[in-house]
Amino acid sequence: MDAVVAALTGKDKLRLQPTGAYAANLLGLSDQVPARVEFLTDGTSRTVKAGPMQIVLKRTTPRQMAAAGRTSGLVIQALRSLGADHVTPQRLNKLRRAIPVEQRRALLDDLTLAPGWLQPTLRALAAD
Image (cartoon, rainbow, N blue to C red):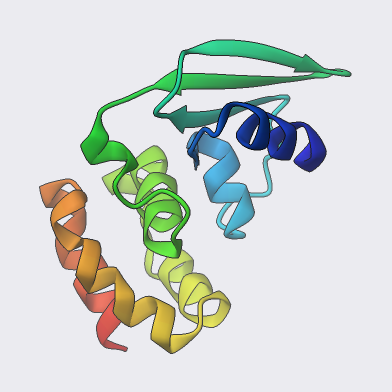
């Protein structure tokens, strides 16, 4: 799947941001391995079939793509997909262990790109 994504980004010069269950899986916040992988993109929306998997590219706003390619973009998308009720202390501890301190502090640079309900959580994650 990584080869297909690399081909898509290289050929069309797209920026992609993993979202949904795939973003949560990449950060170790979910054991779910989706058969349908979703990415936000600044290119056109489309679906690419790669064997049994579907790669869905969804066109989105520049604001959603502002943190694309950075750890903060991945964290924001993963926590957004989990929802406020499922952002637990255990999951935050898992992120603290998985993400180096410098990258966690960089979350503050992209704080305004996160939904309001998520901003206090990102501040706490960056502070530890």
